[in-house]
Length: 158
Image 1: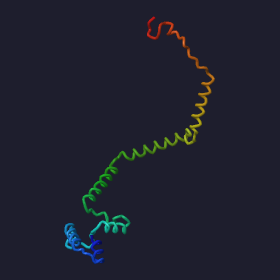
Image 2: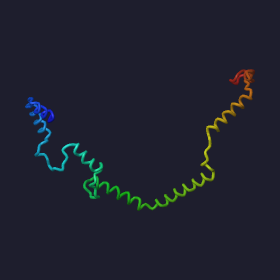
Image 3: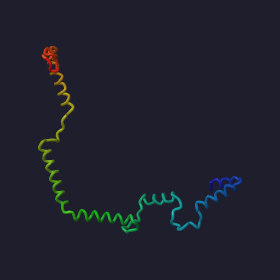
Image 4: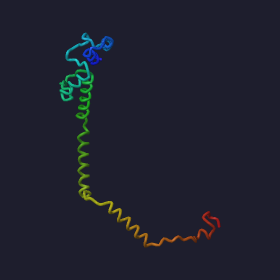
């Protein structure tokens, strides 16, 4: 609206209605000088974006001082985790057990030479070709005259 008012003023056109609408909008949104609290406050999101961009998109004010409930909660979580791990007596034994298991697994892999690469596709193809070759040499005969038919069928009656 401000741009349109400026354009109409420059062109010499009537801008009274537009100016009245602009004044109503400013008052409704409370964009008045009496609402400005501090010169360092942000009036628009663009100002906040420019401020964050100048600081590398990180807010550098944090100095380990508790400012609100979030900071207090973070301190509580950190203290809880520290007490949990420093007071837990089974953790060093668990770590030692897992390291020993990893070492044993590595030794077994080296013993069985699992590091060598095998061409599993070639192995599968060779097995398939052998199966086809063996099936081609065998004659598959179906015996149509079975003993079950002579005895009266599969139902067990004679």
